[in-house]
Amino acid sequence: YKLVTGVQTCALPILKGAVGLGVVYGIAILSQAAGLIKAYPDVVERAKLVLAFKKSTGLSILYGSPDKLDGGIPTYVMWRIMGTLIVIAAIWAITVTTRLMRGDEELGRHELVLSKNTTPLRITLNVVAAISTALGIQLAIMSLITMGSNTAKGVSFSIGDAVLLSATILAGAILFGGISMLTSQLYASRRRAALSASVVLMIMFVLRGAIGINKDLSWARFISPLTWLEN
Image (cartoon, rainbow, N blue to C red; front, side, top):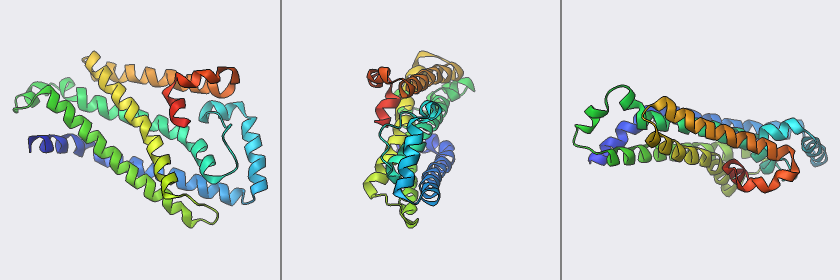
């Protein structure tokens, strides 16, 4: 009962934002799929578009390598938005994790929380459960909206494609939620914990961009978790 109550206390402040982001993610997927079909309804036209993308250095920096584009709707959507949404999901995870892990301490409420017959371990478990609940809600919302894009002519996401795309985006939140938990243990202030996790994200983002524009760095895909997720 105490664990459930603690999870509710941690989850309630972040659920509204989690639901909103889930809707935004889903709409982004929907709009990209519908927009591509409307602008390039013909397979030949989409093939030409793919060639143009593969020659663009700027797009490779922003979205990652376009080498796997084949003109299909799912692969285009995955490439076009996944790199961006993974970063947004990571920023959200850094923000809420450090807030839940270090927010009470910054506001001077940590001792008050501990006085309510709880322990630091239980607090950490509450945070993990709360973030997991939020991510589960986001996954469901994103998958449903992605499946809803099938109402557009020419768009065909299977249930597996929708769930996989949504889960891959949210994997960025899981990864940086874990990193934020680590930095929250290393630093006493929320600001320093969030800054340290953000620096890690920035390094990974820059490395991903370098890999996208320089084929000689393809071996570095095994270094940056952002490229792991995109693969």
